[in-house]
Length: 588
Ligand SMILES: Cc1cc2nc3c(=O)[nH]c(=O)nc-3n(C[C@H](O)[C@H](O)[C@H](O)COP(=O)(O)OP(=O)(O)OC[C@H]3O[C@@H](n4cnc5c(N)ncnc54)[C@H](O)[C@@H]3O)c2cc1C
Ligand code: FES
Image 1: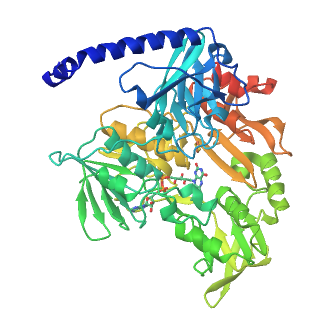
Image 2: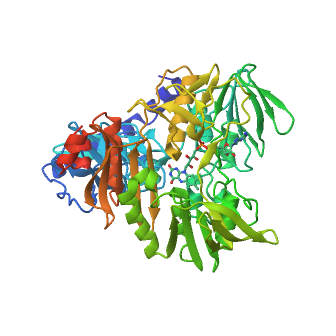
């Protein structure tokens, strides 16, 4: 004990003793009063209010504590939103233990009670972020912040939650800044400022890397949420940044924006940049994503033909379509999300697709056909099983689109959503294993070469569930790759085992998808596809390779968790029907 502390105890010791005796008597009286007075039984639809209790711990004025539920209110594998000091808290019961954590997701604050609980993790129904129930740490993405957890004890059949007042004020837990140690000479360079690049840089710092971290992006912006570009096209880059500039400064993450990597030579561990400089690295994370595919047809360079990869393009589209004839080329996710975004503003919108129905390649004919009707109800017209032969223009601006059958569509604005080509042209020829689709082939640790990792849209890797070689274009997967690669650079030896998950919402109908179906034999439907209220299981042999849900967000979150736990039911079980995926996930 320090001398200062000893002195303060001696000073006024009689008053201290009297105060302690008075406090103990008060606590005994209060606890007798509360004993046997159970809190109100919880109503499963409304959050239950906590009953206050007292605490004798030092600094207890900084904490709040209350009985939030009876132990019998929750079955094992169940979650419930309760209230502590007027703040919603998620109460979880698993294997007889209770855990309390933020009620809202660390991504966009969706209520986690509607998600799925499985094996120590809770997955958000909205976009699939996943948190550890004991620590609140991120188990899966797309979020940048973890969530709060609170202390739980069980007393006289009541579940008592104790929380620091500050931890109740915000559901997010942003990592503390971690600085560089200038004496550490190791340099890790990240090529690309998308979600993958950002998460790689942050993970390196969070996990204690003290050397130099340099993030290079050819875009002029700090990392931002790219998924917003086809859903909220008015979003400006600075409104959707993943972190403010100060975050990068506080974490000593150097950002070279508006700078393109012109050459990467893995044999010399050297980069050449567009500003004429070179940069040596010890490790590099390639997170350069993809460039939007252009169409090899005349007129592609005319003005008012846009692609949707960067904020300026999304903003230009939404600012130019009011009352105009718009033609969209491509009937998969980006094209159709853009159609839903602009449908109410335009004079006409026609979507051109090569397949029989929109979304056919990913979701199949039946679901694609139902989604086509949804778009048609909202004014979108389709020209399917067609390709563009030419864009025609006047004064340098597009005026019409000519199809392969000779039909001509009037067009003031065109949006081309024809997929991406992995951005790898800058890699010195003959060094890395580049696949036919331009992606970088990596192993299940995401390693491409000595000191080189490739992640996100640019990486082709062995998928742990099926063993197939895949390239997954999902936002959260780019982040998951980034974390795994960063940890592997720091000496861990981790296999990439995250579950692919993506989402879209059009005209209020939410589509969620977990797993990855490169191909499938059958689609087993539980629900009503025409009414857009169903779960679909893509099966291959006796394996369910992917699960899609429309307006079934909780079930798809549960499916992702069942994949993660290795407990997805077989195709034969799915065909029997009557599966409750959320309940099943909770029972793991
Ligand atoms: C409009 C739109 C909507 C989407 N919506 C969803 C969705 O709802 N859900 C979902 O899961 N996914 C969605 N996606 C896909 C998702 O955004 C991508 O899978 C994800 O962004 C991939 O991340 P990444 O870090 O691998 O690459 P990217 O996000 O593509 O980032 C790559 C970065 O590298 C930079 N770069 C490239 N080459 C170089 C170079 N030579 N030098 C320097 N910098 C370079 C690029 O400029 C870019 O900043 C959407 C994509 C788009 C375009
Ligand atoms: S709000 Fe939870 S994942 Fe987006």
